[in-house]
Length: 636
Image (tube, rainbow, N blue to C red; front, side, top):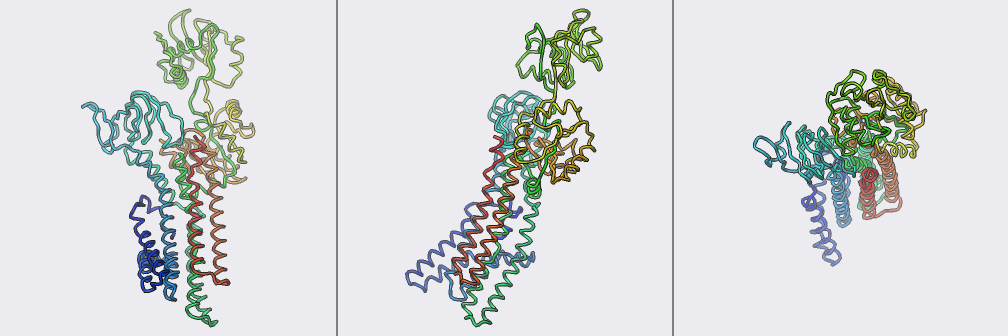
């Protein structure tokens, strides 16, 4: 029942049938003792109670003595064992056996309950397939997954799990990434996009090049980070442990003082020892010590299963205290890539016009050209084949010669071709703060399309959810003010919450000013915003499933590239803080009542045991409520 039972070093410990052997012996001994007691065979009840003392008392006493002599720590287990021994010494072996039985059963329940929180993460490791289909010079063959090396090509058939992290080199398919990101919707991926271990290929046949070994895979890093997070204790955990150690010593000394005082007042020796043992049980701070880590560990596990990694309980507690969120724009609130937003071409079918423009941009690596080709793929269109295509630096693309020349570019190319950009059908599009690509033939303008970085599909809902929770919000970007204001309006942010034309040092200064009003969290990509992430009270990295830099730079990493998990993570942090407070208030209140009962109302030892062990189990179960996984539910 000590805090060592939930320590991170026990991660991965077996909680199977072996852990039930001693509790089963204790229960068997208790039942045998009670049967002998109530059948008036008092000469035999000592056998049953003795089994309880051996199976329930000796292991606890051994662990307590090891803590005392090796680590100089006075364990709570020692208090329980001393109380049981005192009960036997005054001729009340049944009360001592009841104490050890409930103590053992409560410890087993607590141990298995906390193991549930750990196994929620360990289950991810079980999702990794044992074998993979390797494509090499000998064809396609099945090999152990652990034998895969960097650069190997793995074939993924429909329904197959991704064995290691990699990148698609051939094929296209829908990937179920819910095991890592918490996102319920499959994500369509094609050549050049990253695949993560333990995700599922739902359709299509993919060739994937291995980019990370098993030891550095996404799942392995998740387990490692959460294990480290459990080791990095939160302030409330450190206080709980500090208080528990010192209070345990005070309880032992106080019980000895009470025993001596009662003897001095003439109380019979057996009665004094019995009441001192009752006080020892009633005042033990087991529920207080376990109440905080029970909630923290459950919250860390629930968050990780929902695609959010907290780098320690301190980060979880800090998030609960945040008063304002500052967001980087590009790649955080927006997709970070250009997308076609509008097409206009009088006299043309829109799809045919898009195929023509894609033909002009087919060989270009410019982000605008990439956006146009991506739009063609999304519409399942064909790129028109054009000849004599050539680029004009800083102007655009042309194809052909003379009056039949096709072209696409910026206003400089429009002027070069002698076309008039001031046509009525373009006025509305020209008034928008988006990048405009003019398309013409000869000296005539035949159409145009606009390209812009677009908000993520879930950003507006996340912003609104955070605003409803009473948080102050700010968006920071190095982009121009008109562009920033357009994005802000689409997200529901006000002009005074929008800050543009910022250099990295400007973001740091703005974060510092926001921090004057309370704790501030900065949400960015973990690379370009490293300085702002470090300056904020809490740094949150977006889309960190494949970014080692983001995982190292931030206090919290959202594995998904969407915003759905952020407001849910904030609610989880607030719920964790509330449950910790509930646990501490309940544990301290119950302990005070038990102590008063032991001192002034001659509380029987069995009732003190029931109150003590029942309170411990209740605070553990209350903490485990956080495993209901609000992050996945909100994201899904």
